[in-house]
Image 1: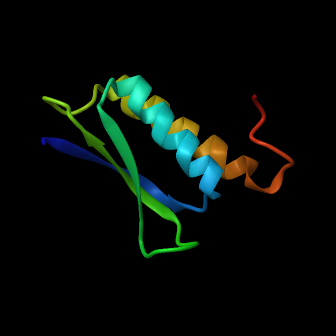
Image 2: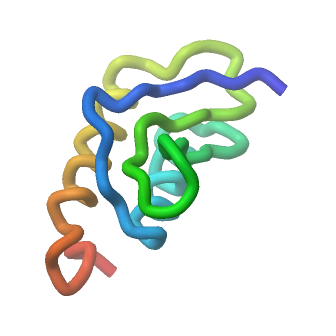
Length: 86
């Protein structure tokens, strides 16, 4: 299965629920079959990249920008009571 990796400019500390939200968002935005957040190590290590499966080519620049902005918003919300949406 073909995959493409979207590296984050800086590692982001995300909760497990935020990681799942990021994977779901990236999958929907790119129409990939699956998205997987990659951490530097198991556990609480920051997310460093996303691996997008089932894409014939690299995601469009607009999609990449949207995913990175969403990832930053999730990281910024990590200290609040929720993700800011339901």
